[in-house]
Image (cartoon, rainbow, N blue to C red; front, side, top):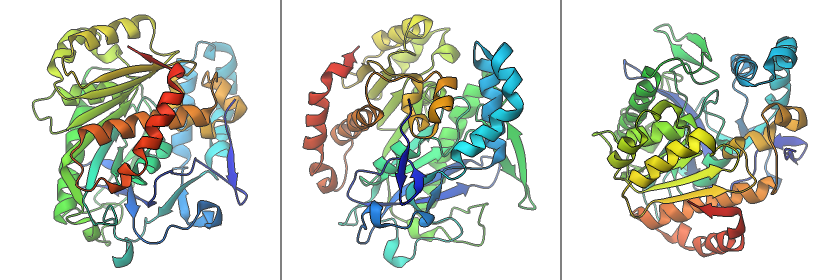
Length: 405
């Protein structure tokens, strides 16, 4: 079953574990290379315990009814039992999705509609070191809010996280901004063509270009064109870029790392979906020279997906790379699903637990943070230095869950 968390009567995703508070903001860039993403970033100031905070100041996980409608479409068209159960329930699925998530909060200060003031500017660590940048690519039928648990945890340790919302038809919903500042909506259309992966890779590099403009102080947010983003000027460490992805986003990560334009120091893949690159996984593995951490789930990384992934792994030559599978886990452990699905929703998405969701979440995040600490040239390591030994000890204590591939 899923794990529902409540504080002061408010349902929320897990609290970030790092020493810094977290801010959140949505950004949509302008022009032909426009991208839409949600930012999670550390903010300075005295950190008030989450239990003492007003949840009304936190970020809404819910993005709107089109997203629930798109996810219902995904469930109906992909589950094996959809022909008789889910098709009959289809008029109610999006209402159920709305009911599950409409009041869900993310424990990060929502700064949309404004900007960090001078005292709360996102300046990374207490030593004002620049923030390493992590670009995140989501999986099929996900969206920019679906990795809030991982993103807030990374941001609380000093990272600047950009969670993309892909607009190739694979997100449950998304939109484009018109010249009149209105939204033109698109709903999930599934995996239809190879060009979707190319589109996703372009959005990854467009996100990097947006990060560079943000660091220069020249980025315009189409969602709030009247508000400056100048408080992020000079705050990003663009020499320490990380690319991360789940499922289809894991495949997107591998393809982007193999691209001649690759500018990422390391990559992280969570349960990469190998179908879009099944034609020649060996060639893709050889083309990725960047160190990669891959963490897969027990139920997803099997059959044809596992065979293709092993071919990629065997062809990949970066000795720093690590490949793990977590026992007793499902594909949806890689995102926010355990914290929001509810019993019925978890059954619909084929969820199951051998280990508690808290342990799996902490183990996954600790693997990522220890990997980043080892292979990034972080300007000020004091934040991580204080916690990495604890995280390494947790990994050691739970090594029976990990299978090293």
